[in-house]
Image (cartoon, rainbow, N blue to C red):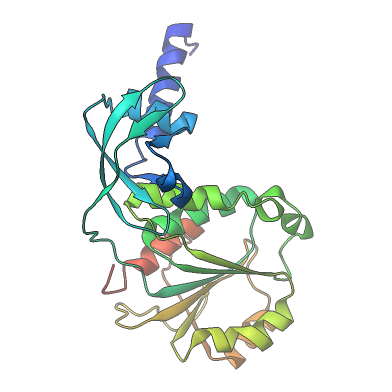
Length: 260
């Protein structure tokens, strides 16, 4: 079925509306707080405030400082280049960090964007990205890794979930030094669960303490890698009989923690 230009424009508008409507909290960089008046100059954010939230001067806008407080600020002026705000009036946040450390093998940049966005949205605050046998070398040379493009999906996830605390991200481009020299130290005596579709033990139905979860590359771990993690105290577990996307796996794991 062919669509006319009006229908195509409508579908495009609906897609953009869905994308922009996921910005539930406007995150600002801390250095912007020093400006008087406080200004939002990002074109995407300006469009969201004007055309999705339909805010006008005098309205309150939910905003937060990256790694700082969140609250409400009154819009004093809107033009095509900026939105000006009064000082933020902090309000208590009910969002809690998820006490689960995420260890994940590097995947395709397109997939990592989804994974990072979901991880930030769900409250993961430590993300350790490591190399594995089935990780393509080109992934480490991508702009996502080399040019810091991984920060954008994290901010997107925070804005979706009304969170301001940026996750810490650590990178390990060599597997053996990571698993032998760093992994056990990073666990801090907390249980570590290695997600494996063919493991005999099921993932716990409830997690009541800090924990760590390990997720392999898109092609899965090789036996050597599984053995290395087990030597360092990891427990292979199966989350479901179904094969899940990584971002869906993160949500399923987060839902098992009592603080989620």
